Length: 366
Image (cartoon, rainbow, N blue to C red; front, side):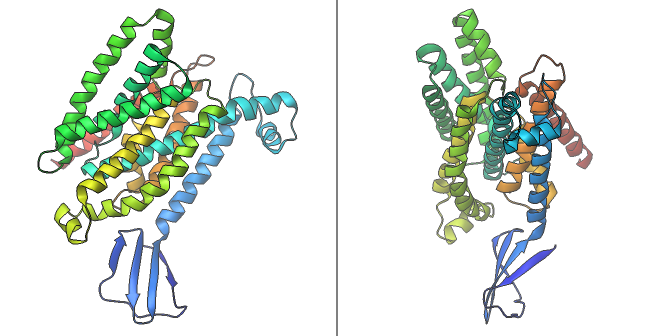
C-alpha cells in the first residue's frame, strides 16, 4: 500500500510494533515517543481524484448532447459567459441542472448504500432492496395525489414515508439485536407490500395524474431545473459531515457489538442515527426525481474494489454513484432519441446485469 506520512513533530519517529487502526485502510494514527504520525492511504485520494476528473469530463460531454447539438467550445463559452443568450440558456438553465442533480443525487444514493451495506454487513443491504426508497415514494405519492403537489409537501411526504418505513422494518427485524439478513428479508417483504399500495393509489387516481406519477415513479431527470437541485445540495451539505463523523463508529461496530461497547459506543443508538441519515438522503432525491434503483446497490461495491479497502467508503462511493447515474442518464437520453427514457429504467437494467454477475461469481466460489 502506498502511503504518505505526516509527522506532527516534524521529525522522524521509529515505527511502532502495532499501529492503532482508527480508520482501517484509510487513516491510521501511529503513536511514537516524539509525537504521532498520520498515515493516509493515497490510493483512496488518487482514485477519488480520477473519479472527479471522469465526472467533469463526462459532464462537459453531456452538455453537448441534446436536440440542439453543441461543441465543447460552445459549452465552454456558455460556462464562461461569453456565448450568445440562446446558447447560455440551453447550457446553464436546461442542461447543467440535470447534470448537477445526477451527480448530487448519485452521491446521496451512494452514501446511503454504503451506510446500509456496512450496517447489514451484506452487499444486498441497500435502500432500494430493503425498501426504504419505496417507502419514500409511497409518502411522496400520497401527498402529491391525495393532498397537495407542492414541492415542499412532496419532499416532506417522501421524508416521512422513508422514515416510517425504516422504523417499521427496524422494529420487525429487531430481536435481541439487529441481524443484517433479517433486516433485508423484512425489508423485501415490506417493499412488496408498499409496491402493492402504490399500485392501488395509482389505480384510484385520474388518468393524467396517474400517468405523470407512473413516469415519475420510474425515476426521471427530465425537466429538472435549479430549484430542484437546491434541496439535494443542502441535504448533502448538512448530512454528509455527520455521516463522515458517525461512520467511524460503524467501522468499529463491524468488529462486533461487544467490542463496540468495550470502547464506550452504543451500537443501537449509532445504527439508528445512521439509519435516519441514510433514509434522509434517499428520501430527498426520491422526492425530486422518483425512486432510482441499482445505484445505491452497486456503487459501494465498485468503490471498495477500486480503493481495495474494507469498511464503508463514503467519498469513493459517492463519486462512483455520481458517475453511474450521470452515464445512465446520458444513455436514457440518447438510446431512443429524440424520445427520452426515465433514467430509472436504465439503472434497473444495469442492476439486473450486476446481480447476475454477483450470482455467477458466488456460484464459482461454491
